[in-house]
Amino acid sequence: MKKKKLSLPIQILIALIAGIVVGLVCYFAKWEGFTEDYLKPFGDIFVNLLKFIVVPVVLFSMIDGILSMDDMKKVGSVGVKTVLYFLVTTAIACVIGLVFANIFKGAGLFPILDGSEQEYTASEFGGFMSTLVSIFPSNMWQSFSTANMLQVIVIALFFGGAILAAGEKARLCRDIVSSFYSVIEKLMMFVISLAPIGVFTYMSWVVATQGAEILGSLALVLLCAYVGYIVHAVVIYSFSAKVFGKISPLKFFRLASPAMIFAFTSTSSAATLPVSKECADEMGADKDVASFVLPLGSTINMDGTAIYQCVATVFLASCAGMDLTLGQMVMVVVTATLASIGTAGVSGAGMIMLAMVLEAIGVPVSYIGLIVAVDRLFDMGRTCLNVTGDIACSVCVTNWEAKKKAKAAK
Image: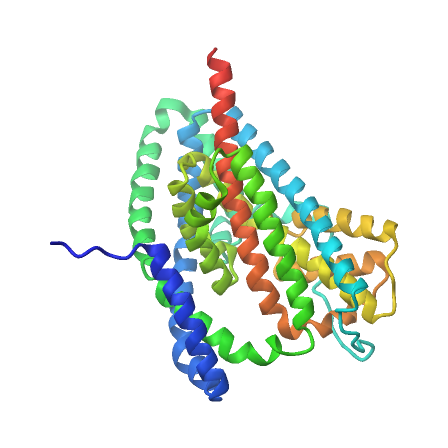
């Protein structure tokens, strides 16, 4: 009889658990250097392979998705629904983050650290209009070489729309895109099959090197953020998956688990894109819709980052001896929600967004230095949540478009 092979989600889960165990052993045995020198490089190789295929996956999957829709009106419809979904869930995420941060602060669970001597300079943010200009590429090949995802998305939109507009004369271009995408899919599946190796090596390294911080004075701040991440995923994504996506919460999280685990260990939404696409396909999301929603979501959807900002803002404000007023909290929600779109595509967007929020309410930006050391631990959870939201959005938009099509057919 043919031996049954373990499914990829099970392989990734086993790799995650094994990575935690090995990481703890290395941490207590003071073998952090071993994970840094001999395990992490294999994780880096895997992430490099994912980054290597991200640009062609985004470019050809989006163009192929646009061509499959065969209608620029549908592309616009999907785009509007996607952006609205992300804006609404990000605003809700901000509220959840503020609620739990104030509960923890009110219960006296947040440590009061002295941040007056901290030094931190946030990367400069030129404003929304500057970001708007920057998403339109002046050099297509530079956009590809720097993996500027927003510019790659714009390039895909222009080429997809132009091919549709050219009609029958663009038949050869259609065939080339379809052929290239078939090849990229095969390459993508091979790279994804290596995911357990990447998860194991990265998890071992993170636990071995970050163990001290996990057990340190910021543990309760981390706990607050993760409670917010979990509640948002379980309540908001379960609700949208059940009501709008017509998929049970248990099935949704079971099928999304490979992307969630890999996002958690890699802390990169872009690198997780190929895995996210496989998960969305398993849930029945239209390939053309998923090909459009997921790349866009990996760039502008920041629900996890929004929760992190709110928790960090309340914590840093308390360290600065400030109690936020209701008006300031509303300012946090508005600033964080708009910044999730406005800082898209900017390097270090999470810290830039946090700096913007702190400046908006008068907290010294230098206080960010208190949490920089454990930012990766925050980042693991927020990236996992962001990716989960991308997949949920692709399922919801698929069903909304299906209802629209059914209504139009009557």
